Image (cartoon, rainbow, N blue to C red; front, side, top):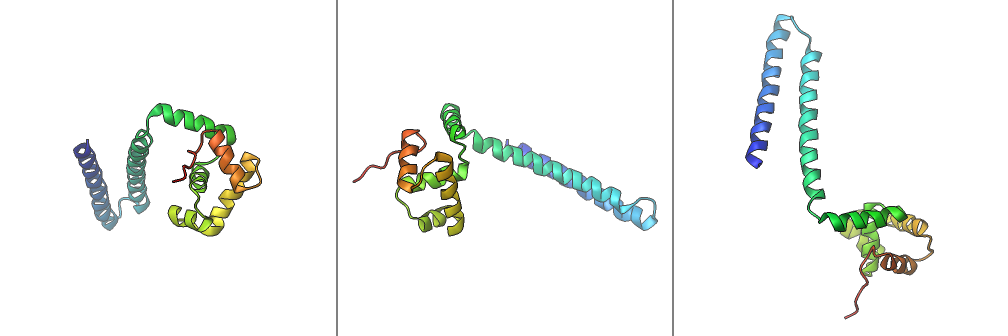
Length: 147
């Protein structure tokens, strides 16, 4: 599969380079406009981006079992939590501070606080402990076991 993608990418790159090379000579002769060739190259690059983006997203989405993913999506949609908000809630349930959550997810402290505020609003709770308990009750997060 990877060889096929590499070959496809190589052929498309060759086509783009051929177009750019042809545009160089036709521009010199004054027979065609530069915008036409740049537009064609841009469309080809857009196609490459869409193709590989679809391949990457398709692979990452299919890495989880479909049943678990569907049940999780149904539960999330009933509350309306985004994927990032769910990640924040999971880290809250593990007992992390806002700063630790920000560090783990590579987001700023104000962003963590915004996500937390959105979680509280969507879950109709006032505090972190209530949000975690409701998340556990709804099956969105695993209960924390004390050692």
